[in-house]
Length: 165
Image 1 (cartoon, one colour):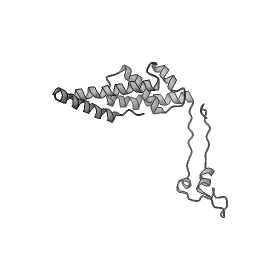
Image 2 (cartoon, helix red, strand yellow):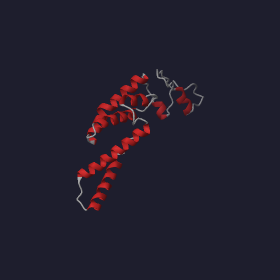
Image 3 (tube, helix red, strand yellow):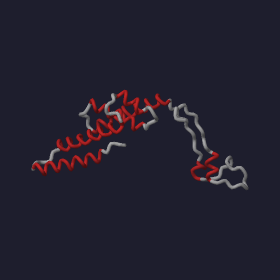
Image 4 (cartoon, one colour):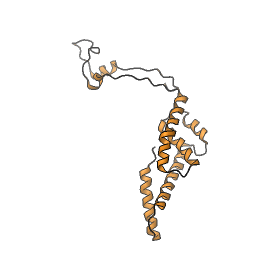
Protein backbone atom coordinates (compact mmCIF):
# COMPACT_ATOMS: atom_id res chain seq x y z
CA UNK A 1 0.00 0.00 0.00
CA UNK A 2 1.43 3.38 -0.94
CA UNK A 3 1.98 5.83 1.88
CA UNK A 4 -1.08 8.14 2.02
CA UNK A 5 0.85 11.44 2.16
CA UNK A 6 -2.18 13.54 1.18
CA UNK A 7 -4.20 12.07 4.02
CA UNK A 8 -1.40 12.82 6.50
CA UNK A 9 -1.30 16.44 5.32
CA UNK A 10 -5.06 16.78 5.87
CA UNK A 11 -4.84 15.12 9.28
CA UNK A 12 -1.90 17.32 10.27
CA UNK A 13 -3.77 20.42 9.19
CA UNK A 14 -6.85 19.37 11.19
CA UNK A 15 -4.75 18.62 14.27
CA UNK A 16 -2.93 21.94 13.95
CA UNK A 17 -6.21 23.86 13.66
CA UNK A 18 -7.71 22.00 16.62
CA UNK A 19 -4.59 22.70 18.70
CA UNK A 20 -4.64 26.40 17.88
CA UNK A 21 -8.36 26.60 18.64
CA UNK A 22 -8.14 24.80 21.98
CA UNK A 23 -5.01 26.63 23.09
CA UNK A 24 -5.89 30.02 21.64
CA UNK A 25 -2.58 30.27 19.77
CA UNK A 26 -1.43 31.17 16.27
CA UNK A 27 -0.97 28.58 13.54
CA UNK A 28 2.56 27.40 12.90
CA UNK A 29 4.22 25.47 10.08
CA UNK A 30 6.39 23.79 12.70
CA UNK A 31 3.29 22.46 14.44
CA UNK A 32 1.86 21.27 11.12
CA UNK A 33 5.15 19.54 10.30
CA UNK A 34 5.24 17.93 13.75
CA UNK A 35 1.77 16.45 13.32
CA UNK A 36 2.51 15.33 9.75
CA UNK A 37 5.60 13.39 10.79
CA UNK A 38 3.79 11.99 13.84
CA UNK A 39 1.16 10.49 11.52
CA UNK A 40 3.82 9.26 9.09
CA UNK A 41 5.80 7.58 11.88
CA UNK A 42 2.63 5.92 13.28
CA UNK A 43 1.70 4.67 9.79
CA UNK A 44 5.15 3.22 9.14
CA UNK A 45 5.19 1.54 12.54
CA UNK A 46 1.77 -0.03 11.96
CA UNK A 47 2.78 -1.15 8.46
CA UNK A 48 5.93 -2.79 9.86
CA UNK A 49 3.87 -4.65 12.48
CA UNK A 50 1.40 -5.76 9.81
CA UNK A 51 4.24 -7.03 7.62
CA UNK A 52 5.79 -8.86 10.55
CA UNK A 53 9.09 -6.99 10.21
CA UNK A 54 8.93 -4.62 13.17
CA UNK A 55 11.23 -6.80 15.29
CA UNK A 56 13.56 -7.80 12.45
CA UNK A 57 16.75 -6.17 11.29
CA UNK A 58 17.22 -4.90 7.73
CA UNK A 59 18.68 -8.17 6.39
CA UNK A 60 16.09 -10.38 8.10
CA UNK A 61 13.26 -8.25 6.73
CA UNK A 62 14.59 -8.53 3.17
CA UNK A 63 14.88 -12.32 3.57
CA UNK A 64 11.32 -12.54 4.92
CA UNK A 65 9.75 -10.36 2.24
CA UNK A 66 11.63 -12.01 -0.62
CA UNK A 67 10.92 -15.54 0.58
CA UNK A 68 8.19 -15.41 -2.08
CA UNK A 69 7.83 -13.21 -5.17
CA UNK A 70 7.06 -9.61 -4.28
CA UNK A 71 6.37 -6.32 -5.97
CA UNK A 72 9.41 -4.08 -6.47
CA UNK A 73 7.63 -1.07 -4.98
CA UNK A 74 6.71 -3.10 -1.91
CA UNK A 75 10.33 -4.07 -1.27
CA UNK A 76 11.53 -0.51 -2.01
CA UNK A 77 9.11 0.84 0.62
CA UNK A 78 10.50 -1.61 3.16
CA UNK A 79 14.07 -0.55 2.34
CA UNK A 80 12.97 3.07 2.77
CA UNK A 81 11.37 2.23 6.13
CA UNK A 82 14.64 0.82 7.48
CA UNK A 83 16.53 3.84 6.21
CA UNK A 84 14.08 6.15 7.99
CA UNK A 85 14.64 4.30 11.25
CA UNK A 86 18.22 5.61 11.16
CA UNK A 87 17.50 8.97 9.47
CA UNK A 88 14.27 10.23 11.08
CA UNK A 89 14.79 13.90 10.14
CA UNK A 90 14.50 13.55 6.36
CA UNK A 91 11.95 15.68 4.54
CA UNK A 92 9.32 14.16 2.27
CA UNK A 93 11.23 15.55 -0.72
CA UNK A 94 14.42 13.83 0.46
CA UNK A 95 12.55 10.59 1.18
CA UNK A 96 10.98 10.63 -2.30
CA UNK A 97 14.32 11.29 -3.97
CA UNK A 98 16.05 8.48 -2.07
CA UNK A 99 13.17 6.12 -2.83
CA UNK A 100 13.40 6.88 -6.56
CA UNK A 101 17.19 7.07 -6.89
CA UNK A 102 18.38 4.54 -4.32
CA UNK A 103 15.80 2.17 -2.86
CA UNK A 104 13.75 1.30 -5.94
CA UNK A 105 16.87 0.38 -7.96
CA UNK A 106 18.19 -1.55 -4.93
CA UNK A 107 14.88 -3.44 -4.66
CA UNK A 108 15.02 -4.28 -8.38
CA UNK A 109 18.53 -5.64 -7.98
CA UNK A 110 17.57 -7.76 -4.95
CA UNK A 111 14.57 -9.25 -6.75
CA UNK A 112 16.49 -9.88 -9.97
CA UNK A 113 19.30 -11.62 -8.12
CA UNK A 114 17.03 -13.58 -5.77
CA UNK A 115 14.67 -14.93 -8.41
CA UNK A 116 17.06 -14.87 -11.39
CA UNK A 117 14.49 -12.92 -13.34
CA UNK A 118 15.05 -12.66 -17.07
CA UNK A 119 12.80 -10.66 -19.35
CA UNK A 120 12.26 -11.59 -22.98
CA UNK A 121 10.81 -8.96 -25.25
CA UNK A 122 8.29 -9.83 -27.91
CA UNK A 123 6.59 -7.81 -30.59
CA UNK A 124 2.86 -7.50 -30.86
CA UNK A 125 1.46 -7.34 -34.34
CA UNK A 126 -0.92 -4.50 -35.14
CA UNK A 127 -3.47 -6.97 -36.49
CA UNK A 128 -3.95 -8.32 -32.95
CA UNK A 129 -4.73 -4.88 -31.61
CA UNK A 130 -6.97 -3.72 -34.44
CA UNK A 131 -8.46 -7.08 -35.51
CA UNK A 132 -7.42 -6.72 -39.14
CA UNK A 133 -6.92 -9.86 -41.25
CA UNK A 134 -3.38 -11.02 -41.80
CA UNK A 135 -2.41 -13.36 -44.60
CA UNK A 136 -0.11 -15.34 -42.29
CA UNK A 137 -2.92 -15.88 -39.80
CA UNK A 138 -5.71 -16.73 -42.20
CA UNK A 139 -5.84 -20.47 -42.73
CA UNK A 140 -8.30 -20.44 -45.56
CA UNK A 141 -10.13 -17.58 -47.22
CA UNK A 142 -13.43 -19.42 -46.79
CA UNK A 143 -12.82 -20.08 -43.06
CA UNK A 144 -13.82 -17.31 -40.68
CA UNK A 145 -11.36 -16.72 -37.93
CA UNK A 146 -12.66 -15.40 -34.64
CA UNK A 147 -10.83 -12.83 -32.58
CA UNK A 148 -10.07 -15.51 -29.97
CA UNK A 149 -8.55 -17.74 -32.68
CA UNK A 150 -6.42 -14.85 -33.83
CA UNK A 151 -5.20 -14.13 -30.29
CA UNK A 152 -4.50 -17.81 -29.59
CA UNK A 153 -2.50 -18.16 -32.79
CA UNK A 154 -0.19 -15.33 -31.71
CA UNK A 155 0.61 -16.45 -28.17
CA UNK A 156 4.31 -16.23 -27.44
CA UNK A 157 5.86 -18.37 -24.78
CA UNK A 158 8.97 -17.48 -22.86
CA UNK A 159 11.31 -19.48 -20.73
CA UNK A 160 11.97 -18.26 -17.23
CA UNK A 161 14.37 -19.57 -14.64
CA UNK A 162 12.31 -18.57 -11.66
CA UNK A 163 11.03 -20.76 -8.86
CA UNK A 164 7.45 -19.71 -9.55
CA UNK A 165 7.08 -21.06 -13.10
